[in-house]
Image 1 (cartoon, rainbow, N blue to C red):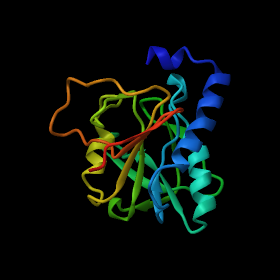
Image 2: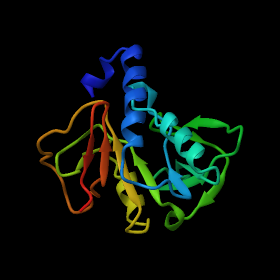
Image 3: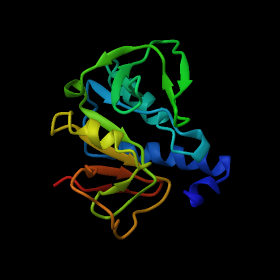
Length: 181
């Protein structure tokens, strides 16, 4: 996380533009429903907004959902945001929409997965609560899982357990990593 917080805003803008170009090169079709996320600004997390706008351009019928923690803030679900959404911070300081239609995980065909780091096998390090991994187990097995990172892969991530769900792809400013077999 230290490398990411050290990035200047101009570098982040450039990386996000380059990552859109890389995303456009992925061997995927734009689905009907995508789970994106609102970036964790405190940690200069990648903002998937450009990718989501591109996907909406390619598929005007696209439904874009965002993660929201339940009232106990122990589980995550997906909501399709309204046109002019009200946003709040959850107990972890992450932005999430207040309103929206709840979407069942089986309807989501692509998930943009936030991460701190990833390795050459598609394993990722998140923020340690397991919300995305738990949610991904509820999605259809064919749902495409895409990480986005300002930095290249680590050679390995040591503390992977059986609850961790690997990525199918990861987009970086200079290349795409393909893990899907």
